[in-house]
Length: 148
Image 1 (spheres, rainbow, N blue to C red):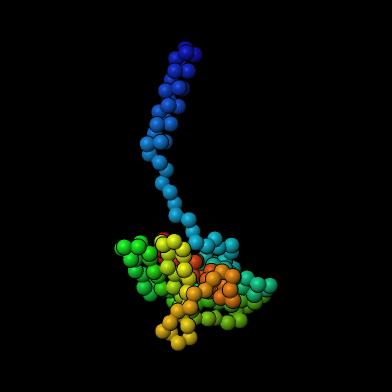
Image 2 (cartoon, rainbow, N blue to C red):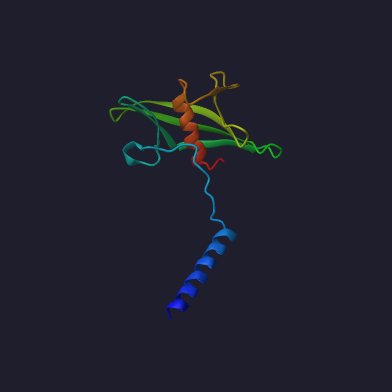
């Protein structure tokens, strides 16, 4: 009886190994940005930036995917978003801002840009610049709209 059990266990282990190698587990895409919190727990307002007692939240209800294109040759996807950011200080709204940003992804690097005041040109922004709230908001929106 024990020999039969050992043979069965060995056959089962071998079958499980074969199945796991033959059918790999599905891979999930990594997120561009990990949201740490939401304004008053409302998932429509993910935190994009915090400094001292002032927080900036993306208003997902206002967010629009204005344009999305994918270059079939390079595989680069470009997405343009418009959205509002709500600035909150000590849990009171102090200002709201309208933004238009763009992300290019799928190539060698991910590029984020903000539309200039003239509304006709773009300026690249980074996570270590004055524009970090816009940069983070753009990554949040890329995740929200499923941009890969």
